[in-house]
Image (cartoon, rainbow, N blue to C red; front, side, top):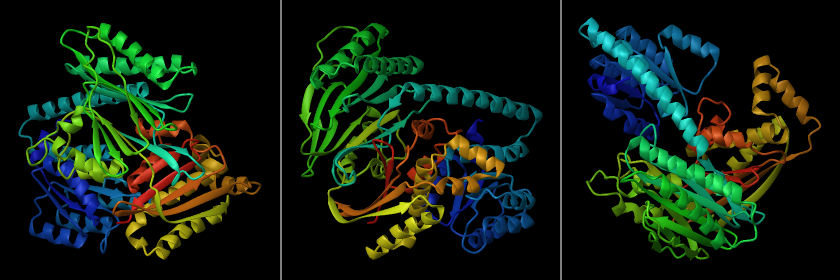
Amino acid sequence: MDESFLKSLNVLYVEDEVDIIQLVEKRFAPKFNQFLSVTSAEEALEIFKQNSNFDLILTDYLLPGLNGIEFARKILQIKSKVPFILITGYVDMQFLIEAINVGITQFVSKPIQFKLLRNAINNTVESVVLEHLLNKSREKELELLKYKDMYNTIQHDATLRKELHIMRNDMFKKYFHDGDNPVTYNGWQVEVFYKSLDIVSGDTYTCRTLDNGNVVIFIADAMGKGVSAAITSLVSVSLTNYIIKQHDSNKCISSEEEIRFIAEQCVSFMRESLVEDEVLCAIFAYFDFKENKLQYASFSMPRILLQTTTGSIEKLPSNNLPIMPYVVDIAIDSVDLSNVSKVALFTDGIVESETKDGVLYSAYLNENFSQSPFLKSFFNNAYTYLDDFYDDVTLFFIRRPFTNIIKEKVYYFPTKYDKLDEASETIRQEMVDCGIDVDRHDSFFTALSECIMNAYEHGNLAITFAIKHELIKNGDYEEELLKKEKNNDKMITIRYVYCNDNESKYIIVGIRDEGAGYPETVFKNAIGDTTKFNGRGIKIIDYYTDIFFFSEDRREIFIGIKIK
């Protein structure tokens, strides 16, 4: 649906958590004529009594004082036709019936998915818009826009699913480590951020783990017009994946020879595929984490950033011209990572976006990279300078783990349902013993409980997502859990680590099962198809934590938060 009509509407938003208000305001406030946020239902009610000229009300359910339903009931006594969207984590049938009876017809679950909230807003205010229309022809125009947008949405979703299927990330949320304790021993964490501004993107990437354990990252940024650039980019990634798959069985060559072969094969093919005035910028990065070595060939991509263990920033320049039809030799450079703590590889969407004060973000990039221990903190810092990025963005953020450990402890729990709360409470007590105000971190324990439950049911009890859904549907779920755990002697290992990085302190908790670990399909669903249930737990964990990784065998998940 064309959202230009939203500019004429006024919205009242009730939410008691300030950080959530800031996120929602950033995404939605600019779309409306007025977007007023308050932190309690009582305050919102007083505002509405003074001025009822609001076209839509968004409200959380769990609020101090009046809850969302009680608030809606009082508002609708004043103005019976104002539409409500209730934001809630509740899915109880009786709760939904009560809400519907009050007059609420749109619900958005927590944690908030902005796409779902956007759809709920569009659906809710459609009636308001229709009341504002002056004649029948305008109604027909709105209907045509609705179906046009529906068609475009279907095309967008199908194209995105295909794009994500072609792209690969063998290191998604995985932790490459060398030692018994992945939190504190030598290792590397690989994170990626990818955002397309249109249905198709000039940016694509692939991240592949080779048979020898080394990692190849390929990022493509096609410089051209619309769909043509996107096709070029996707073809290059598809080709790179194919070359790696066919070549990976050859283990008798050096890393330098391997990355040169992959780059030369891809570049040779792409030169013949480019149309007039089209160029392809790209980077091939080959990480040998065991030997602490990086080999790279950069074709007019932004400089690779490195931070040394002493804190200084180094920049690796592009060493090749962009990929064009004519043939030139390929230069590959080698970098020693022994004294490197962080690496960032990215497309120009990162550096060329304009900040709120009118300069390019590249002016703040080095400082942000230096001060950000993880990808999430990098983008939290970036959005203090930016409203948004103005181009497609791909960024790989690769870092070593923390080394300064204040306290570390390991606990073992049997695979018993009645021990799961004890495991969570053990970590809560450890945090209290470390002088941490646990009440400020309730959301972290939501993520922790999700991890422990997954280790219990999906890991040690081997209950797949399909089986779980069938058991729930038949009402046999809890009975099956208790039946399976009777003869199960597997343990759940909980690792508690209190550590610091520069001036900040972190809590990291590792939860390990002795079963099959997380299935690969969960990762695909988590970054791709949001209609699938399996994968939503990953999103919940990611939303409520600052640190989130899996061990290479997917049996241990690490979650963490910044304490200060």
